[in-house]
Length: 126
Image (cartoon, rainbow, N blue to C red; front, side, top):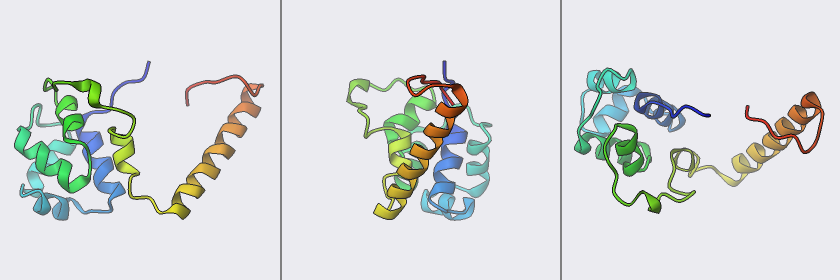
């Protein structure tokens, strides 16, 4: 069973994928860099919805997902389809060339794992 990432880990990863410094991300979200550092290190247990909304906008992470990760009840979670996830948001702005390279890498990686595991139909988690 996979463990859900922390809000801090998601924020840090989204910021890094977007190639934003902590200072630039904090300024764009209208919060202090020190507060963003606390958020990324999970020192803030329940950030305000306003801060989550600002960070979601800046980092292109769905607001509802940030709310859920922060422990807030998110009404109508059934709307969270496959395109409304953190992973989808992190990779939404890939170029076609980047997407093709990732698909090629994933095919190579899966083939390598099948070879090591001993069969083409054996599916295991990474």
